Amino acid sequence: MGVREVLEFVKVEHTLFSLPFVLIGYIHAHNQFLDELPSDSTWMSFDIVWILIAAVGARGLAMTLNRIIDRDIDAQNPRTESRHLVSGSMSMRTAWILATVFLIVLLFSAWLLNEVALMMAWLPVLAFVIYPYTKRYTWGCHLWLGLCLGLAPAGAWLALSADVHQWDAILDSHWYPTIFFISLGVALWITAFDINYARMDVESDRQLGIHSFPARFSEQATTRTSVQLTLLWFACFAIANPMDEVYFLAAAGIMAIANIAVIVTKERLADFQTTLFRVSMLTGWVLLAAIIMHDPNTVGTQ
Image (cartoon, rainbow, N blue to C red):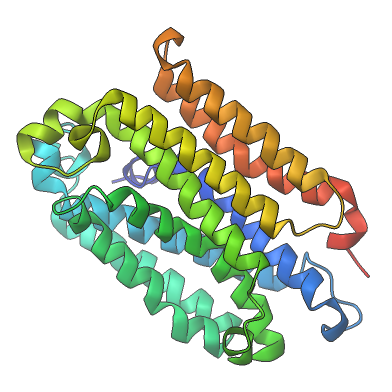
């Protein structure tokens, strides 16, 4: 089992979804507590290295657990029957070793950050374990996945804010409203994406009793709900607006329109899923660019 196979197993390209929001959460914490950080502090500190490593560990753990728990379902779905654990190209023993390694990476990085980050690391781990089972019982599984990824900006924010305020960063609600609404926006954004992603498996999900939204409701309901969720995540980002200027708001508006355009023109697109993936992935990066390009000094040395 080489590096390439491991990267394919954890679908490393999907890391590009949460990574910009990890950076947004960290940058906001840096700017929020700038006056309380050391005078020579820049956002490009060593903390960001451990935060990114923790994010990689969390993402790898989430995907590995999902593959392990869903292996029986994957074996009965024509789209997923060639996945590593189903095809036998990876053993269960190797998968569990990978899960353990990713968990160690997450916990070690959190430990190097601060006590609060380490003590709160159980939350995403628990969320990751629960997610694969939700699809067996409720079409709310898409929202649960969204909440899992919504922890990304919150976790990055906490990793730095706890350096300044320890547990009071949580208890004194320093996270409200900006980080709360950014995280909620991410959760709704991922929910909208995942509902559409599940359109590929409608027939299989119905046969296997998987409770996806498209398998439970009509095509029209899926499209309508996706648009409504997109408007909601735009509203969350508008409320959060971590900048005094209009750039972040404008970027969120442009990407909301782009996502809705893809969703409502589904039938006219040659490859709806690829187009949706690219536009959805671009959303976070455009929002990150809006923050950085607005005023580089806000994320540099102060």
